[in-house]
Image 1 (cartoon, helix red, strand yellow):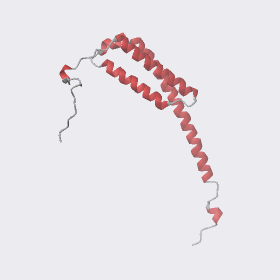
Image 2 (tube, rainbow, N blue to C red):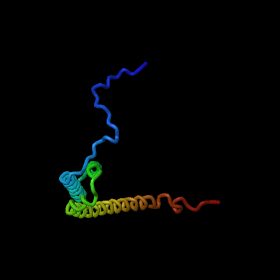
Image 3 (cartoon, helix red, strand yellow):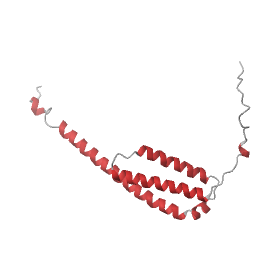
Image 4 (tube, rainbow, N blue to C red):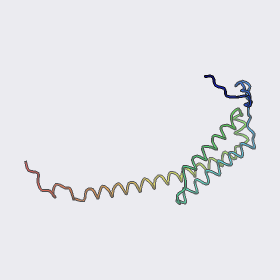
Length: 140
């Protein structure tokens, strides 16, 4: 039985060699860098506030913006990009350093709490309840 699907209303496929080359626009790149900066700033503030910040949503947003940046840079001159956006990239680098410091502080705090809990559990397990002295000497 042959497939009778009507494909006449779809656009004709274009070969890969005919695909349009998208060049990066400096304004577009500046806007993307700005969105990445804003997302990083929000994440840093959220982590520092300690009020249940949604890291999963933040990571998804940052991933989407990095994807946009990669798409915008396809076919762009890297040296020209660096020259045109040096200020924005330096600001972003500084914000990323602050973000990294906040994330490391958060992870260190989580590690400390986990260590405290582990030690408390170990102390509770070794309170003498099941010690050899409790049951007497083992008889041979």
